[in-house]
Length: 484
Image (cartoon, rainbow, N blue to C red; front, side, top):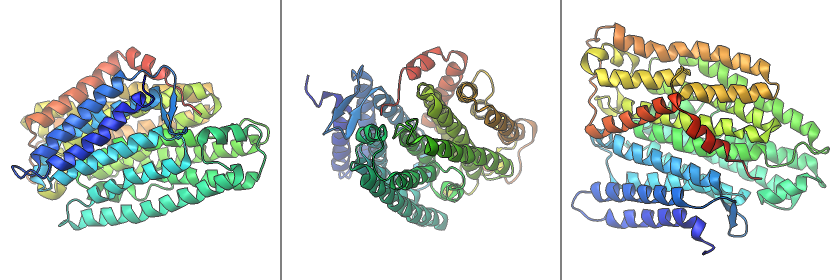
């Protein structure tokens, strides 16, 4: 077997990006060649990633790139999300007059950067992958060049993202100064003896941790998210909420397990670290749940909803810090949340007014009489967000709560449960407006294409099926450890 055979999905993905760029110069229809080849690239990569044999993790390129069950599963999920967004938001891009070939190049590069970020086992490679993922996102956020909100979102995101990159590099330099290496496996080995400047290591670790807490919008690093979500095109916002968040959370999990914090030398810092995660989780839960119920704009509502969901994921990560084998609760949460969010953003993209001007709660009033199919889809995704039984959202919360209870974090689970009850109002209110109210005269029209309806239906079917029969997913993700 060739040494590079496990990396074939990433090689094929990179070649697909180059081919997509080349075929987009054909002037038959500016967008179509790029769209078709972007889809083919994602489909081929998805097939290859599912066929790679990864019974044991394999390191490539001097150990800076790891192929494992985690990385191939994550790549499959990211490709699936990319396929859904390309198919489901095609009509939206045309309506917004941003259906250009450049969109597909940037989307593919973003997904490639996210997948390499998950595979990275070296801090410098992590930084490069982080920038490869982030730079297309800055451009896509400002893709509506004539919209001031889109321009503002792109500028905010770019400036803050640049600061975060600098913070990450500073943290990486501190860790290198303390350990003499940037390889994650070597840092872990160093931590078992912890000989060197521990204060420098602690400072570096905290700085890297902060940079990824910003990426996942954990409180108090959440302030950018509502404005960027609202100003960016809906399809781009959906990609940020799924592809980028998933990759950032996986790396955040790695950062929290970068060292053997249970070793005698690092044990005092480990307790401080857990307390920091507890504070970030609780603040994210409380602030996200409290503010989401006050929102009238759908995209801002989903932004604050994602902040509260960040709290649940952090709670799962907190449980895994005590028992690393419980990390599967985080994988289940990320998988379920990505599916729910993908379906919701495709539904939001069906709003008819240009520049997302009508994406308000009032636009959902009386939708039951016009589009009962969409109401059923909205209801299923929102019920899942609220954690109702018979949806994947129920099991995402259930396993996070169980992992936290098993590690003694009962008090914080109680807080999370109370926040779930509060935020349920925000998810049930749109359903009440759709079903129990007559249409408002100023409400926007909702016109989905066959493609967007198909994507929504498939996403909803998976959300419901995994909520009724989750055993296959649980069995798959339970067998995916986080490698040091």
